[in-house]
Amino acid sequence: MAPMAPTLAPLPLQGTMAGFRRFSVAEYHKLIEIGVLTEDDNLELLEGYLVHKMARNPPHDAALQKVNRRLFQALPPGWDVRIQSAITLPESEPEPDAAVVRGDENTYVQRHPGPADVGLLVEVSDSTLAADRIDKGRIYARAAIACYWIVNLVDRQIEVYTQASGPAVAPAFAQQTTYRAGDAAPLVLDGVPVATIAVTDVLP
Image 1 (cartoon, one colour):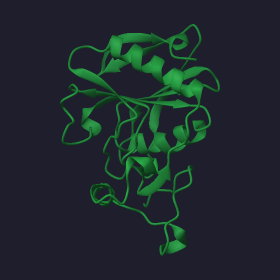
Image 2 (cartoon, rainbow, N blue to C red):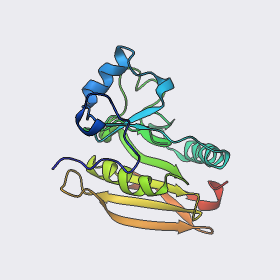
Image 3 (cartoon, rainbow, N blue to C red):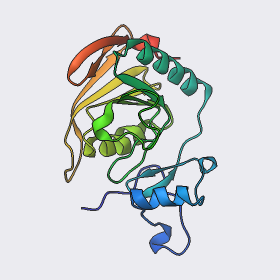
């Protein structure tokens, strides 16, 4: 079954059916390689569609800085944090707000991390909350990402999604747990709890 178009509006392209064209990850890489797309275009590839990344506001960036610091302090050896950097999935190349990945700063010089490299993905959400729950949730579940956090600035909570379906007609995470002020979310890597992070420590 072909993936649904993302909630975030795809970028219309001239000369394509209904104004849109789907790209493979390889085609997306080629567009970057030959300079058709640059980092100034502020796009990411979601289920084959080129999608504009949303502008960030001060609360979002403050929360992201807190997430980065808490994750970095909590990680055991052999793991690293990447901020707003690409990960390569079968049909998408999103740029999550934070990714906990195997290795160090030298591991991904020649490629982006893939699903097997990822221990945790994090999106900091306010205006993008619906898309992060629905679209990113579907994309990450299809790729069998082990754990996905939404730092929900609207409701001031951390939503933890686990037990990804992998490829399916309706990809989804089977388990969702919500942590609120006064709670601490467990950081689990390779099935092993390594730390807890207080909800209030990552909220602006």
